[in-house]
Length: 138
Image (cartoon, rainbow, N blue to C red; front, side):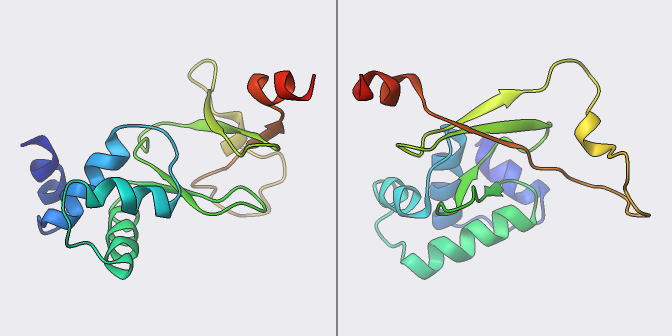
């Protein structure tokens, strides 16, 4: 199984709970913890809330998951970790979408005034109103 190999290759023990959470994240999107738990419990019933948080922390620390936390929103997680991309968040419904960075360069990782920091990661979040919420307002 690919998920088992992925966990092992990142130095993590393979457990049913880790496989269930990783599989949920690999389905895509940016689910909140409650949604991850609900969907993972469909795969494995023995997943406590604390265990889910522990698994998410382990996956994030190992580089298999990314935690994003748009201002004023609950933490969300995604399995898309090996590229640079930004996020677009709807202020009304909270939907989160990936925004591709055009080209090979990542200018957000090279700030004009880094002040001696070696920048390792940058998070850019665009805020707006999604088409569905715009239509609902009309």
